[in-house]
Length: 489
Image (cartoon, rainbow, N blue to C red; front, side, top):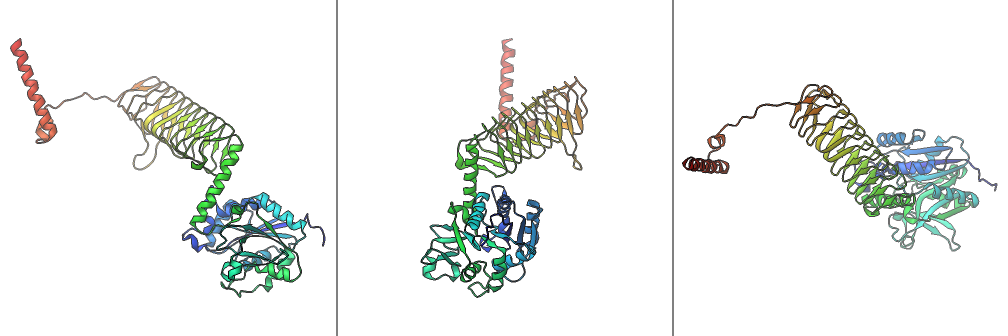
């Protein structure tokens, strides 16, 4: 047999199953861990091998699954499984889409998300080294229930794979399971797949039957045990989904720790696989860093913080806050208890403080929104300080409007800016002001009305209440005091 170490590689990903054990309206392969759907992790691992061709077989919820795959990898070829059930039929259809491809075919399952490119590359290398026609990945587990068993002969060579429902009592006791990952010679598949029947407990054409057929034909069948058995396990229900998520997160957190990130409590820290953290970032307990979030050196994130698709600058601090699609500048501070919605941009050394909500707004360098404020659809210059309780009233019941605040503006507490409105550079506003008109640069904006006290209002309008009784007592005491002063005079 010739040396085939340079044999071209095609990858087939099986994503046609319904996944009934998930008990979900969402197709199994679209359930997510680590910020990607299960099939997304498998696609990424496959692309790490730089295959000549990549084919994904779909069927259940075809449009949803195919659409998600196209978003993840628009160069993957999507093919449809027909009414004939079974993994053998799925691979047969995928093989037909490869035309005259002559090389090795790596078959992956879309519900085995923890396998990395390095493990798959080692599997292909072992296949070449042993000059095998079929090489399968196995794992030895404590509880093999639900998985196909790898049956070996007295010499330790693989004889066949037996599915759980077809296994005898002795076969079911075998702890070595089939991981659903194989490397086949394309020629072997073309020869053996037509011979696979559906005479089994599930009435399906099993791809695993190719192992026994190839062995019976005198071809070399080899097996490689996964170095990490947990990584080779599939996801079939919500329990396994959560376990896969935990394992992936442990792997991700450890990778960033080794890159120089301080993670105070790995057990309560979740980092998605597409997030990026620089050395000397500190992540405090109960923190989620999700999506494509990037955090630069020296930043402190947490505790009790969630960032989704955010950019955090060097030496910034985000504490007990929630942010999505926000940009936080270098040296800026956020929180505690801030809510940054999409489109928030906080400049270098700026501040979004306690109980502040922001949306679609730019807050310039060194500008501060310290507390108890809503800033939506606003452009705020540099060196601005907004008093407590600032609100940009951006919606007039028909459309959103913007508020513009120039550089070095300082506003009083409890201000409402009724958009569209602009405050010029260096302007100031008084406490309680409702700003409906533009304030020129350097001007003081006020909205004052004389205070008027209506004597006896509570006693006249709230008779019988505790407040009315208290007011009456106070009025009586005041009259008595006034009378005493008159006598003394």
